[in-house]
Image (tube, rainbow, N blue to C red; front, side, top):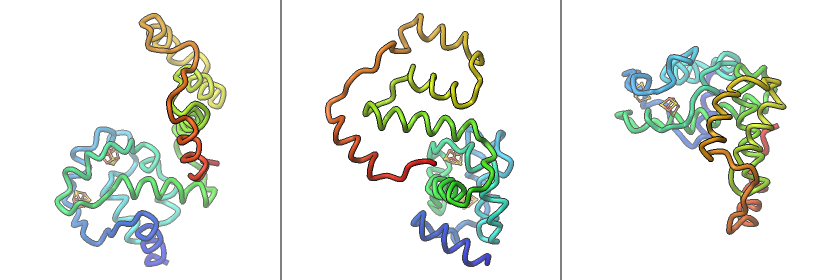
Length: 176
Ligand code: SF4
Ligand code: SF4
């Protein structure tokens, strides 16, 4: 079972994880490691050990922001962001309880805007996110300040190549 899980994560992410010698450099440079329940090298170790349920149910796979800082510091070029992407997909496919549902709601709202407009329409993103989480008044003052400074567009804008973006998005898997 351990080998099966490791093999699936390796195949789907296009990465090998045998090279990781747990030097901890990745976690040291990760900007969000404090918010994770397991640090990035622990997730690798758990994947190696076949701990499917624990990995797919972890907060860490959702908290990762894909900044590539770990990859740039890893002496073995272990591609942790690709692994985290794969694990998020596998978690959704397996229907496990998502440990950070608000982050998933944000992903969905963000991708929905890109799919609809070819870029992110910030006000639409905020409204979708608020509707799906029910947190209508959280960060209200921040949103208000952004609007006052012209950082939140009231209406969506069109981009060149909108159709190409739609085709790309339609060719990708939807986050269910
Ligand atoms: S930096 Fe690379 S080798 Fe070191 S623990 Fe992280 S993934 Fe493993
Ligand atoms: S890609 Fe993810 S795990 Fe790597 S440093 Fe950035 S947030 Fe941390």
